[in-house]
Image (cartoon, rainbow, N blue to C red; front, side):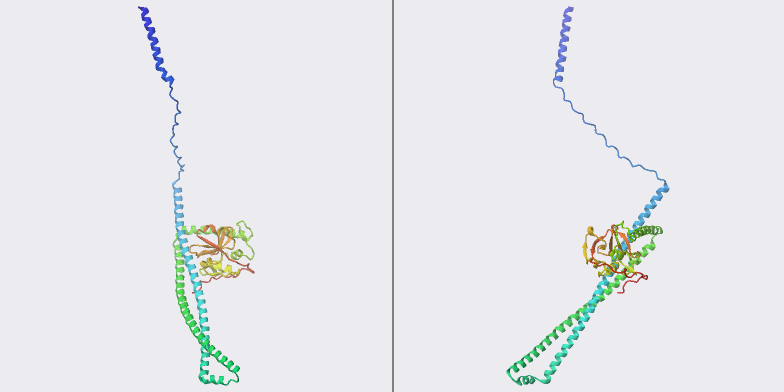
Length: 401
């Protein structure tokens, strides 16, 4: 009995072992493929917060006040710049009206001269024709036949016939000349009336331009007078700083240093222009008593054999066009659209000009102007002798219309 139990247990153990091995075979025969686990995505690092420095209340108030003053200064400067631009345009339009009026008056004088000459010629030819008519009336047509019949020979007859024919042709030419002279006089008289009307219109326009310029100047003065004291102090401080910088630059130039790239050649345009540094701006001015922008350029180039009109728009239409890359000392630079300001490039990125009412002839960086319109180059000759007109002290007003 006991032996049978042991045999059964032995057989059961073997069966159990076989069953375990059969269950383990698929796992061994077909192992699952191994895979690389995906990296875990890290959340983005939070942006570093700016380091805040605690500011006490007095410091904050000081900074806020500076910002307010700067904002008011910027606003005031924008208003002042706008007024200066309008004033510059009005002043140059005034110069354009003066130039056109002078041209019209010159044409008016020429037309009057032509009319007088034509009238004199007409009166002379009328007198000549009247004299011929009187001679014919006095001698009568028989006189002609008598002259022909009185011929001594055939040759004499032909000569006398030719003479009479010449007189007839001359009379016809005189009559035709009279008709032409009459038509010419009528046309010149019409031109004269037209020029007189145009001159009257230009004089009216000139008066209007004068009033406009004066109103702009008054607006500028009112703006400055109404500005708060701190704004005026800032403006004065800014002007003083720029004046100091320019004085230093000018001192270096006159001492012969060329660190800024400005070289002064004797008898050259730059030397002539710098001689008038500090001359006050004067609307309509074209002498060392006072310059406006185009009057300054006109006066400089007149000393170098170049005749220019007193109007920046007309100056812009003359000379040789110069691209920015080829800009050289002595080239004339223009600003605005339409052109209403002009100066002369002196090298080193600077130009010299008569800027505005209340200012003076000065050097300024070309890069400060955002309204550059172009440049022109004129064929000039060296200046002989000292710059003209120095020592004039009393400014003169704009030219009378």
